Image 1 (cartoon, rainbow, N blue to C red):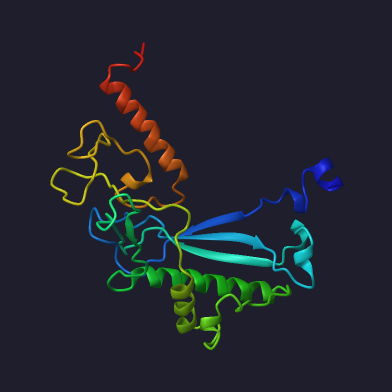
Image 2: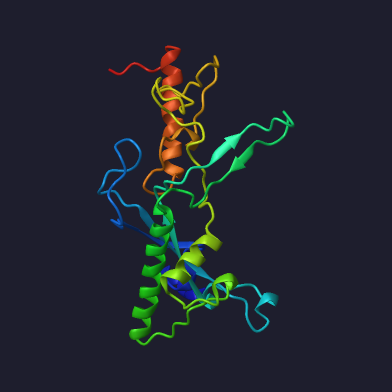
Length: 242
């Protein structure tokens, strides 16, 4: 605490949770058709670095001090997944929750799985590099018991890890996507108005036609800012610019 109080450095200066993030373009296959994904030079893989504490030797009885964190979590994220989920109305119960089919890793050709495996390979290679520098690095296979019988770091092992641990990273997008009038899958128009419903707009990450190349928090704020400007403009309430 003295080091942090006097120099703002040391373990207490580290962020809690996500410490670093990196972006890559895997170039595993040609870019998707126009209008269905990011341009060829945009990243399709994000790596998140997180420090974790594995409770050992009675550590569950103690408060987890940052300097006792002993795990580096390497998390690859597919930035532009080609798998598609579905959201259905609950016909059996009009007041019930909608039925959501996530559709993870369901795209034809296995693009999303291949991107995840490529990201996991980077993590294995990093661990090997750190070990060569003299650091004590132990590869932890305890979190994926269904894959423990496979050779660690092999393509088969990494595909197993990806299939058994894949989850949504924070925010879902695209369930009410924006699109042209001739797009039957589009829900809102360019002014965020829901088609066929008067007086209703949507202003969140669900209107994104495709996922942004990075975290969606700031883009969602910008969608809301744009919605506010559109609504003010429609009512003649925008301030005049001199």
